View 1 (cartoon, rainbow, N blue to C red):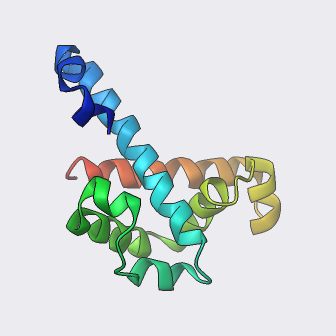
View 2 (view 1 turned 120 degrees about the vertical axis):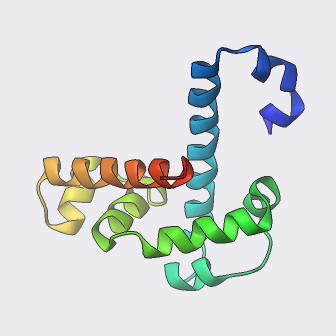
Length: 124
């Protein structure tokens, strides 16, 4: 929303800073979408939900649906770790305990989930 509200600020930044800022805004939008998905009884029902949300209005219905579909197709281990981190606000130690894995493995799964989403959003 800030980009649309203050475009002169955004375009006055260097290209590198614009990309960084856009990634942060996108990450926050993804976090919002995942949080919204957690409010439903099951992740799969939320991913298939076609009702408009605040995120849908921000990203546009098509982009939000595409992102939800992508998250649904992510590797299960990454998706589980990401949902626990973002939606349930768990620490890495809590994620490791919940998934019965080591802390370094939990940290790597969360990191890989963010990398997967970032790669997807960058068109890769």
